[in-house]
Length: 162
Image (cartoon, rainbow, N blue to C red):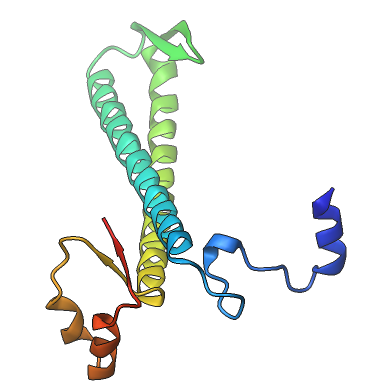
């Protein structure tokens, strides 16, 4: 119901999200900055975890495909489809497995692009809010920035995240 009123009044320019760091609006509190940073890190970890899971599934598909190519196409094999074990022939299963392998490859590529985008977003958020991680070497940051940027880093306005 609240969304209906937002779409009428703010269709051209929706309000910025509260944890997203809405520039000209009121500045975020350190707690909001840390929460936003942790949310981005958690999203990045989730993407990485899903990509690793799909990589393992892709390797399983490759192994099964290699094995089935060496057997007689008329041989019976069993395949799990939606939790149900189905009896098929190798000739029927092999093309489906190869198709699945290609789909998994495409999904992995998409996840990898999303992971890179999330990493850039995370780095931009860190720079925007001057976030430093515990254990991070303080010597790295000044070498990348101008002297005024280094002075800003050493000020107490930054947020330290463990």
